[in-house]
Structure formats: C-alpha cells, structure tokens
Picture 1: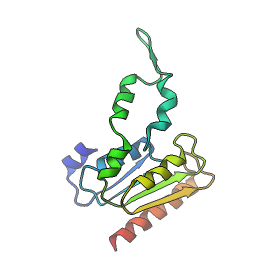
Picture 2: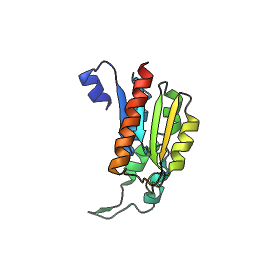
Picture 3: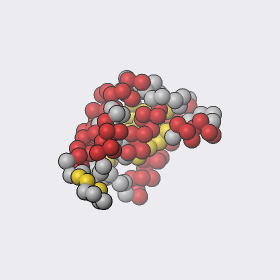
Length: 150
C-alpha cells in the first residue's frame, strides 16, 4: 500500500480495509500522511490467527495450514505500535456475530486509540456483511467522512 501511495502520490487519502486489509490500513495509516482510516472487521490483535498457529506443519514437499514465516511477520506488526502512532480519525464497522475476527478485538482497539474513533456494530452480521448491511455501512462511512470535512 505504501508503494501504491508513493507511486500515485494522491492529494488526500482515506484508507479503507476489511479484515486483514484493515490491519494493513491501520499500520500504513500510522506511518503515512492520510486524512482518516476506516475498517470493517479489522484484524487488530492476532488472536484471530492463534488457532492456526499450532495446525501449521510442514512435510518435505507439502505445507499444511499456514507457514510459520507468516506468523513471524504477523507478530512483527502489533496493533499497539500502530495505535500509538495513529493521529487521524478512525472508523471501525464490525458484525456482532463475526466468527472470524472477534468483535471484542474491535472494542479493545477503540480503547487503545487516542484519536476520534467511531465504532459501529451490526447486529446479526458476521465477518461478511449482507448486502443490506454493506449498503448501510457504506452510507454511514460516507456520512462519517463528510462530517470530517466540515
């Protein structure tokens, strides 16, 4: 994402990422000049991946699960480091019934941020939003962005 922003050099930037892309948006937004960061069901803390850590194993020619190098990289990007550097408003949208990324992680993330933060929880929505919830989230996101511009 940093390379794309550097190459295109846009004027004003708002980052949006969903799930693991939310992790990317939060970490990049902590290190580059952006107007705001918005995420849906962001991976903040690595708890969502812990169940895969022990199931990753290698044989001579076959990798089953996730390779350990992934976890080494993941561990090198703790949310606390990004949260300490984020200086722009953040919006987090999360499905209350998410079984991939615990909604509690977003609640904890809001508490760790020292910037204006909007959190919206969507009842009966999981990690992937229904069409109706997706539309509602986009409307709320653009409304939130408009309010920042005023």
